[in-house]
Length: 293
Image 1 (cartoon, helix red, strand yellow):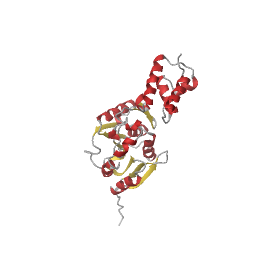
Image 2 (cartoon, rainbow, N blue to C red; image 1 turned 135 degrees about the horizontal axis):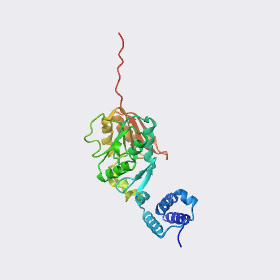
Image 3 (cartoon, rainbow, N blue to C red; image 1 turned 90 degrees about the vertical axis):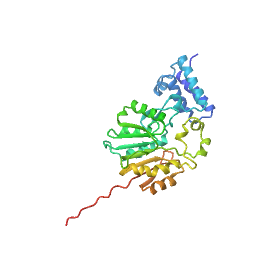
Image 4 (cartoon, rainbow, N blue to C red; image 1 turned 120 degrees about the horizontal axis):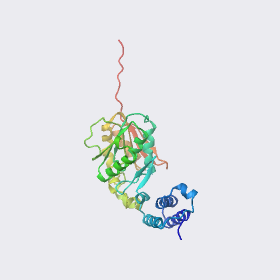
């Protein structure tokens, strides 16, 4: 006897709960929707719609993979972030709501029709810069990543969102080869997890996320030591920056940017009230006032 949408959702939720997974209600709904080619509205409005044998088999595969701690984003190949939907593969970090703190701060004082130049260092899936470009139609961006596979994902996402004409992508080592005083805004979500901590992470991260995008050296700060002076170098005078940090890295990362000459350095909290983003500006050019004689 075929499962209907309601039964499929209830049984999927129970299986994920039994497996001890966090967020079983949302995960179950997402997997049922994808397996049954349904929407959230379908489950509410037509809960007794039967799944086909093919859809049931697909759901079984999805649930088995999730029980083995494969992230839902990898199972489905996509993840929502800010106001956009992104393709996701094991070659990039799964975009997380915490990172939306970067986008929120950037857009707050970013005039809608300003023709800003934006640099995303460690672009990954393109989550940060594509969210910004989608909201600011006059802006253009450059995304840099050391991983060619990650750049392929970002390129695909830019094309699907109709933003390929405003985003250039470059394989490189952070800012190597870039001229100074070039960008109005620099954003980054660099690897910031200390090497010895990685093995203690949840299996979804430890076993499925790219190590290259996680590992921040012995103390997690290795990349910030490089990025702080380099971000200030490539920013235009008065330009802004925002970088994601680990919850316990506020003081160290703020100090690195102040030492590099940043002004207005501050730390922003995410929705969970954890320190999440260090932001600031490059010193503006001084303007001389000419007095009449």
